[in-house]
Image (cartoon, rainbow, N blue to C red; front, side):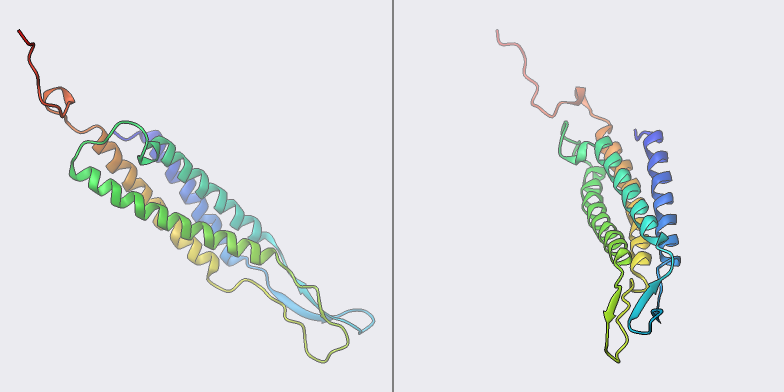
Length: 184
């Protein structure tokens, strides 16, 4: 049977990570081009950098959630073998999809946070062309939030399937061996 405590903690971590990823998308940095006081330099002036912190918070909360699920299920490869049931097959498929969505979500959150933290300062000194004020593209944190959501759902189903396969009914004492009698 799946541990309700583990499932609740994972749901809470995933929901907070999702909320932080959505907040990071809403609070992305924006830049404006201004001249300095002596009118010699064109420079980029950025507003709030809070979305970097939101993105990294979502990154670490999703990481903690994934670690908790993998420790609770012994990463699907350690421990005793699972019973050959439909739940085991479902757990294998969900395990693979859980890791795929996790890696995509983490990549989006980390790339968005790093790109948001990068600020160009002075690009043109005595040139007529304005500097390139680079910011995070719209939708990077939103994609991360979507994959955080998918990872949360898939990891819950994975843990439930894993627990069902681990604790399934085992006839004849649970051994899959051929019964042997005493030799006389």
